[in-house]
Amino acid sequence: MIYKEFQDLKLSSLGFGAMRLPTLGVQPDAAIDEEKTAGMIARAIEKGVNYFDTAYGYHNGQSEVICGFLLYRL
Image (tube, rainbow, N blue to C red):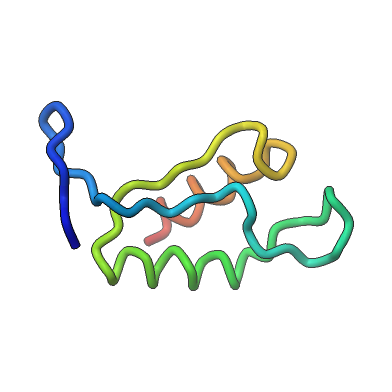
């Protein structure tokens, strides 16, 4: 992994984007599949990713919630 310095941090050049996480259905407002997302986040961390991109607008505000919860658990 290539890291870039940002202030006093070394951030991975590649980030984990949370705009389109796996869901439990096909509807636009379907719940995020927590198990699959946890596996994706764990794999990203294994490969050196330490930059996670999420925003309130992703998955109707649930992207931040699930990513925060899963990152806290890891």
